[in-house]
Image (tube, rainbow, N blue to C red):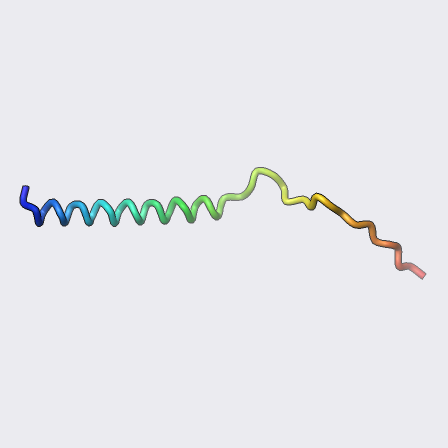
Length: 50
């Protein structure tokens, strides 16, 4: 195998790996969390009725 062909195949493989990694990161960031997002501290509000 010539060096040029080996270099081209290496570049193509690296590009495919980079694209796959990018799609994987985007999929992980868009995943919904297992736990609901509830606050740890809640403050009671005084009733502001007249």
